[in-house]
Image (cartoon, rainbow, N blue to C red):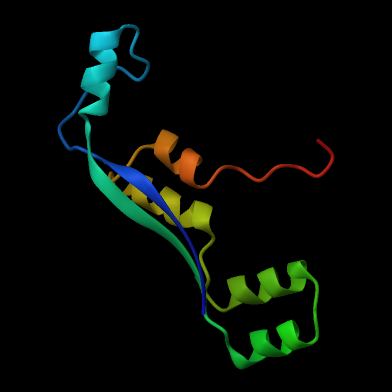
Length: 105
């Protein structure tokens, strides 16, 4: 089993602070809106089919395709699910699981 993880701050419920604090006091209030951390995980179970790909030194794209077929959720999807559940913010999700960089950049 392979695990990739991150920890996002947990957003306190019933908070309605400005998204971009403009002064020090607002910044302190913003920090107080989080209560701990929540795990964001990407877990790959080593199935017999995946083991064969690894043993054959298959390329990453084939391994990723099989992992998704077998039910692995990418780290970004796991983070998005936490945002959708109201457990953290989109900003925290992007910190933990940033968008992939394009190879041409």
